[in-house]
Image (cartoon, rainbow, N blue to C red):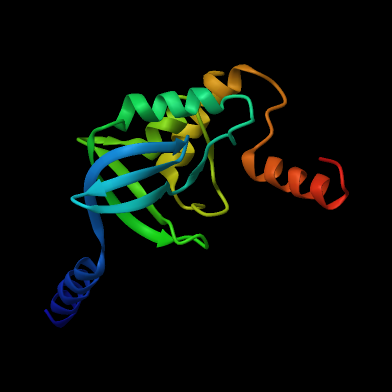
Length: 162
C-alpha cells in the first residue's frame, strides 16, 4: 500500500510540473519551427525529436508545405520537453489527435533526430516507415541530414569558402 501511495504521489507531482502550451499557429518558419500565439503572447516552438531540411536544402519546401497542411493557422497543443540554446520551446506538437512530429516523419519530410530522442520508438518507427517505402526525402539517394549540412556549412565558412 505504501508503494502504491508513493507511486501515485510521484506521478501527480511529475504531472504538476509538465508544461503544456496551447495557441494558434501564426507563422511557420521552416519544416520544424513555428510561431505559436496565445492572445498577445508569442512563443517560438521547435519540434522535438525531428530535424527538417534547412531552407536551401532539397526537401525544405516539402517540409514547410507539410507543416502548413498539418498546423497552419490551427489551434495546437504543445507538450514542452525542453528549451534549446536559442531560447525556443522544444516540444511535442498535437493538432486534434495527430502527433505532428511523428506525422512529418511518416510523410518523409524530416529526419528522426536520434541524438536528442534516442528512446522515441514512435518517431523511429515513423522514420523507418518513410525510409523503407522511399517516401518524401527517401525517394532520392544521397540526402544529407540537416545537422551534417549545418556542420559542412560551418566548415566551409571557417575555410573561407562561401
